[in-house]
Amino acid sequence: MFKTLRPTAMPLFQAFLACGLLVCSALALAAPAKPPLDLLFRPESRLVLGTLVEKNQAGRLVFKREKVFDASTDVPELIDVRAGERELAETELGRRYVLGYSLFHHDRQYPRGIAPNRKGAILISSAGLDPALFPQSTLILQIVTEA
Image (cartoon, rainbow, N blue to C red; front, top):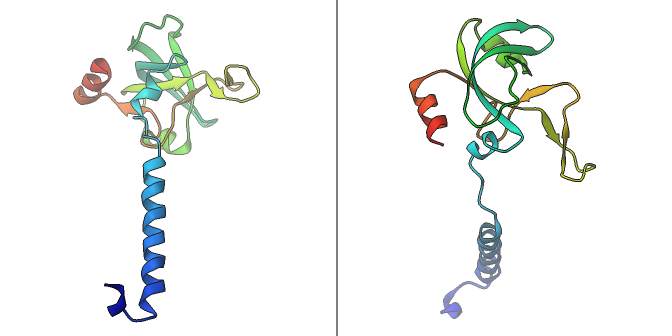
């Protein structure tokens, strides 16, 4: 079979074969991606339905708690979270949102790998979940209550 190929085609064929094997082996070793909802239901995360009552230009949003979607009892009545410029621009006062936030960040210096945020609560962000701030809708409420 290989005797009919041109002499320059054989090294090219071997290079393509080697690249294909590398790609296939890399795909086989890749770990499965965790769904972004896992971040919202971690023990250090809080998932809450609240009404936006204040926006300040220091990058903070303040929500009045209406419903907590897990068994957490440490959620305050007014939730003050850090947010980016886009969230400050896109949110509306008086509107209800489902938000996921955390009081902790990952830090390898601590034994459990997490440490309290010095600047307070922050909206949860991840690939596929950027950030965890959703306008209230029946679909969003159904997803978080069934998850």
